[in-house]
Length: 363
Ligand code: UDP
Image (cartoon, rainbow, N blue to C red):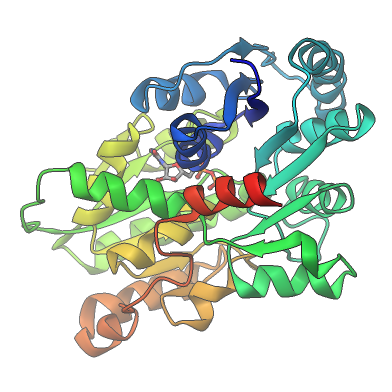
């Protein structure tokens, strides 16, 4: 494949696959690029589930996950492996999505090897290095050494401009998760109207481990006591900090279904069937407004303020009273519920992957 420019696409965790797939597909469909997929496998099980689901062929699998591995150890093991791949493939560019250790390690490896780095989902900020940790630090540091900043929204682009980044290197593309979501919804059989009102819950963020998770689960139990017509579906993240507590506090309740993390297609169907979504996940905050599902964000702050500003999501933290009160309003007040169903998602139109690939080709 002489004359083609090699683009390395990095993936490490579940959301990185979901959000990189549109870019991989657009690269593979292009006439100018050779797409090389590198998995760090920072999270093995959830990554494999998604790779299989989307039929992604991995060219290099670094298989870096180890039990109780620190972030320094993970990144230290990643760098020499990436160096070897860069030497062998001689890429034109390396691209990564989001704010994980994989993204930070990839950007650093590209920088040291003087390879252009493209950052998908650039410009998200809370400006609090502890919330979320380590993601806020990683995304801020990566922005210093990026050639193409693919901002999902105007606000994310503004954050970057306010940090002094050259506006000519910032491109507003929308979020690639909307590409994957809209295509999935199109391909899925139509969902039947749910008989019961289900609350879909996901919670896995480090900042919620311990007391915040206890509060969230206590709120769930109170909600079910007050509303006998409601049930809860909770795909439990495999992190032991989450799993043990979830099964201890919620296991065995007749209206709570605890299950393994769902395959993406099943999870999209679960979002479509849900009446309300309670989550601390970034991706779910972005996806739910496109499905017209009200989202209560189980965090004190969010780097996705666009959905809050548009009225599609409310920040409730891990506060028992706020969670129960907000859920109560949504269950009892149809007008309130309707006010959280917005017409147009602030996170994009479903064409971000194509835009990103065209920008790399032409800039
Ligand atoms: N997701 C999934 N199965 C689940 C829960 C979530 O496929 O059981 C998807 C969800 O649709 C979203 C992504 O995983 O696209 C979010 O991943 P996660 O919450 O792990 O990470 P974050 O978005 O917070 O970085």
